Length: 400
Ligand SMILES: [Zn+2]
Image (cartoon, rainbow, N blue to C red):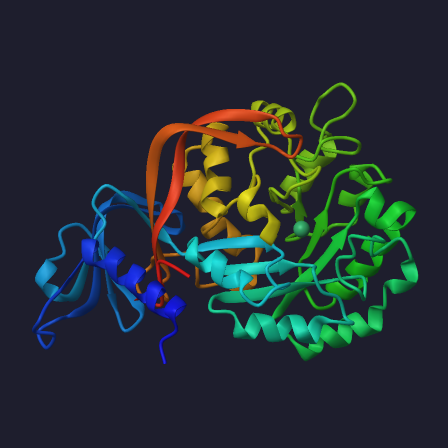
């Protein structure tokens, strides 16, 4: 039975697709199932940036080149004037908390995402069940504290909440879904246990060759002491956190340990969030000093849908405003995101043969106010807005 909500959603999806999609009556002659035609294709994994068509067959990318005949596909999506990019990857969200959160992200074009530390060994089974039921590719970083994120008490203030054996067992139980370990190190989360918590997390991660993601900013320990515990492939999130213990020394210079960590192959991630994770002052200074992010993530929470974060496209637009070139911004949520999160290997690309996760985005011109975590505003002139999301070659409903 079709509920009213379901009907409206189908109607909305239909209306949206009629404007762009042409179906051919004779499907027998079609070489491809779908042709996304005439957009600017940006695929940083292959350094591809040109107006071209994307042909899809059997849920996979079949070809990317200009002027593929419209008659060769059963359906054609007119992408003229828009950007066509690989399905977006958000490596830091908290989308495991409510069953519908991942679907909201999918509508924004996020075909792969990570919940970063909402769950620990006490509640990881339920978290994995949510990830398995999600309509997109959802993986988890297990929190090194048994409880997962604890906004009330701070999950590492009591170090006895770190149970190394239970964490290891949880990972072994869910090797396909738990793809790394999250450690939050702010004073309010960990107090003086920051280094101890991180060292224990590394004792689990290292033998399993899993990445650790640390949440930096306002820690008790100086950032260089935390970076010293990280290995190649680990991730630092909230890199534009305001002081204390951010990426600058007291004179406002980039800490040498930050540059050294980059050279050692540690990834620097945005983690926009809502509170104490990014200010324009820090980000602008970092950009002037050359510290651009490797990956751009939202630190998505439902509350962020109408405050500061909104969606991944909006967060990406902030980095266009800061002066990052478009293809580098797209790399931060596609090819670079795969490097930082090897569990997504094979995705984040439009290479022929890859699963056809494709997002059509408009680059809207206008005057857009972007708000940082300190409620300072900056004005941007461009905004990336998701127009259509295809998952394994199939259009995701435009409305929920
Ligand atoms: Zn977070």
